[in-house]
Image: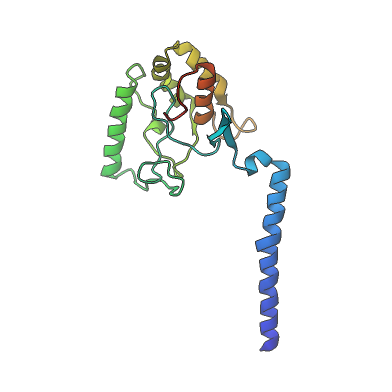
Amino acid sequence: MNKDLVVAVRMTVATLVLTGIAYPLVVTGAAQVLFPWRANGSVVSAEGRVVGSELIGQGFKSPAYFQSRLSAAGADGYDAANSAGSNLGPTSRKLRDRVAADVARLRAENPQAPAEVPLELVTTSASGFDPHLSPDAARWQVSRVATARGVAAAEVLALVEAKTEGRTLGLLGEPRVNVLQLNLALDQRFPRQGTPGN
């Protein structure tokens, strides 16, 4: 029995050292050497302060900014401590009512936009922190943003096109627009008082 206990303890210690210490150190070290910006959270700064991460979506309330995909994370959405989807299915009355209310709100906030509201502007992502929109969902908001900033819609549309990312490696995923990066580019190109989200 002592021999079995010693073997079990040795295996436990060896497993702990390999998987709990050595492996995380090797992976962390490799990430810091090969992809330091990504490994450190893809933090985005503006005017000398951190304003978010390129990988984590956040809400923007001002009409002068592009709005992100909705979040069901936490009571008010975008709660980093509660990453989650709504878990409401297509037969949920609560989901249908919320989507109808969001469609009405978006149409009222974007009177010059096409009648058809892009689906991703009224649905939430699984994590609640999707940082991207499709180019179509960003284009749908151009008139509102241009009006709020007092600039021509064509200029804002050109910025959306410039900030549209293609498919990864030319074939993976879909074209997309990072909402935080787009809103920061808006502030650089068409300065206004305040910061993204205000």
